[in-house]
Length: 254
Image (cartoon, rainbow, N blue to C red; front, side, top):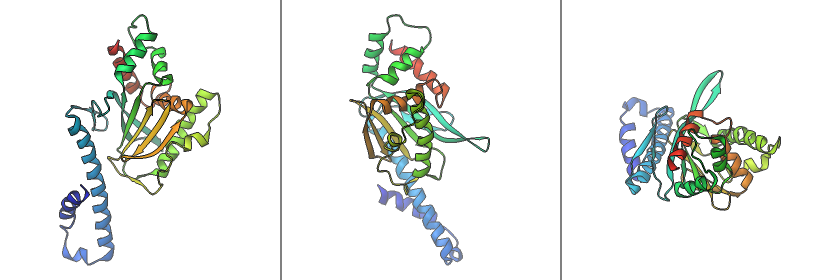
């Protein structure tokens, strides 16, 4: 795949003035641009391959334009999409679009076993059931802010997941547990726009993290699983509208 993409990108990038190619600095600049475009195109093709394999429709996250397949190869279904923003110097910066997936058959069984009367609107109890349960679920993050590094992502997790753990434990941040989420992911990994990170809850309360298709950690911890999904479905979620859409999806299962 990389060879094909490289040929396409090189053809685009090498269409420069001859005098520019004589300068070593310009050559290095072209090489960097080629490498970045190759990486981005590979990520785009991986996403397209996921969709093509399942031959399913996609849903577009409107604030970022990121597309998410409505069903994954393992059967998990898309229940909501949203946007993660960070405030930098008072300006809201778009970091990644995300899609929240779940094993809806098991989620339906869980909801029906715990909720006797269907509510008019999603309830806190419904969200808490998802947070506390062992039902298979996954959040796919697609980077939209170019130039992110793994060290920046680690810092983001330290803040978000650390705060979530403190809420659930009554004040204990548990840095060691947070640091295990990104596991063996090298800080040198470049996360260009379109890069994908997938964090899934597997049976047995195992939180698995994939960075650009590679498994970087598997952490068995009920507390960590609960804290992670609490960031998206808890009282102070990353994207309130995304949480509400997930709630509406749960109601449809009932």
